[in-house]
Length: 250
Length: 99
Image 1 (cartoon, rainbow over the protein chains, first blue to last red):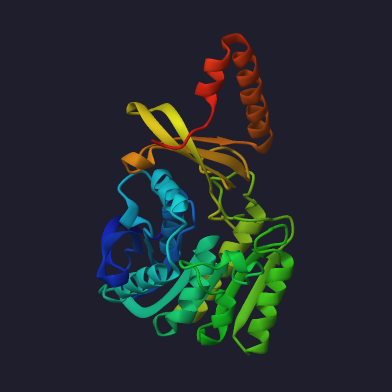
Image 2 (image 1 turned 90 degrees about the vertical axis):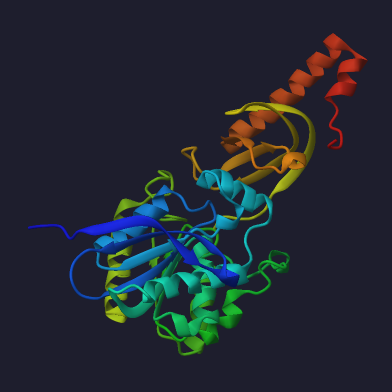
């Protein structure tokens, strides 16, 4: 047998307000057209695990791009830039949605693109992915929310100028199919919040599938964080991600 | 999920990082998923100089128990040092607003 080839590199993309920043991009090298995926990174930043996830998706047939959401606060190592962004209260929702739209546009302009683009996000990126699929519904054909917290907002103090809305309030705008992966030991989102998110999607008649994993908490895909990583659950979760994107983006 | 909750302490002092010694005026303190420490959650402290733009930092990530141990030892060291060095040390050790 042979493994499919891929190419990966840091590229320039045009994000929110036309700002130009870095993104990590990987695509299969085989012939034919490939579906695209925008991968929204977690709050700690555009780190090594995120680039590994991009390459993993490319290995499985998806041209994948992860925009560096903190490029305006660089340069510097991902952890240092992430620390600056954290101290400043994070990045605004509108900016993230704009960057995700710009990343999707980058994918669609590539000669090997099949024109369909999904969005996936981890942790805070899961929340951003949910919001992006709602606010830029025309740009995305599939949504994967991996344990995005604060989709349901229980504490009004969590809302501020940068994050003014609870994404769940915009759920009706989502037009694409939704896959949600969650750990039952997670505290944000906890089981009750996941249940309430699902109840809203069900009431709205959305096309969604949620999977809840026992013995897993937050960030259980992330092998670079040993206390959180759950190998069996992560392996099953990735299979579900690939199957979902293959079904809705091919 | 990672949070954006940060406690800011105003400091007067210095810290040594990769570029050598620097003045610091702020500690950003948070409890969240660490970048490097092999922990699910960690108490992070970033010592920075906001006056100089805050772009360099001296960072630590500690377990919750380690952070509490450190707090206790800081207070113990201050108490014993003040006894040893007197009023001048107490004045110098008190947190003050950033310059």
